[in-house]
Amino acid sequence: MQVQKNDFIEIEFTGKANNEIFDTTNKAEAKKIGIEADVKPIIVSVGNEMLLKGLDENLEGKEIEKQYSIKIAPEKAFGSRNPSLIKTIPIKVFKEKNMNPVPGLTLQMDNYLAKVLSVSGGRVIVDFNNTLAGKEIEYDFKILRKVDDMKEKINALQDFFFRNKFEFTINEKDKKVIFKEEKIKPFIDIFGKKFKEITGFEFEVEKKKQDEKPKEEKKEEKTEEDK
Image 1 (cartoon, helix red, strand yellow):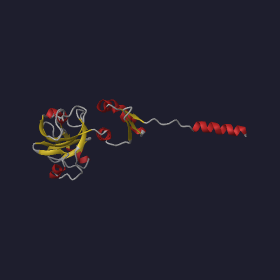
Image 2 (image 1 turned 60 degrees about the vertical axis):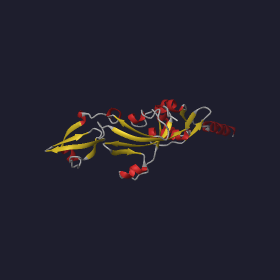
Image 3 (image 1 turned 180 degrees about the vertical axis):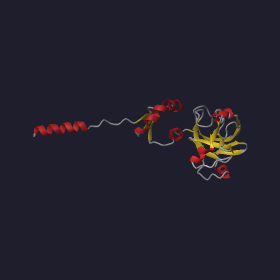
Image 4 (image 1 turned 135 degrees about the vertical axis):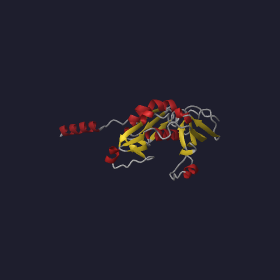
């Protein structure tokens, strides 16, 4: 069976750059690089940018339970290196933040990961490019199964787009996915159209019932008048 665009699949993969693993969903491979976390295959929708672009584009037409190896050019991986992202920063900026810059050190600056290239006198040359920018990437992957269960599909979308899980019900007859919590509404406003294209279902938030308290208050006022 070949997978098609918008299909949901469970996939296992390992990404390498210069023969070094940088990403994996395989527990055995994760152990090799010292990752002890609960690594496991993930569920994604084909052709919807839930994986690195070059890998995502290679999934359509692939067969279930067959092992594949592909190479991805930098343009469809982590991009080409950008010389303008190499900055010269006064060493006093680091000292003010109690940092000791040394060549090879990776640190976080202005919400970006940066690598110190050199330290000379009062100047520090820092590279803000992604560490994998400009590199050819290799992926080994296997599509384990096609996912047909709608609940699994919705949870996969929540994991990727929301980084959270909200309670929902599925109305198969009307093709609707109904969430119970009002706070998810901004997410539905943003992603609802895309989710319908992927799943064929409308996404909406459950409508609250009208509060009947005002009617009760009116009835009480009438009772007082009767007295």
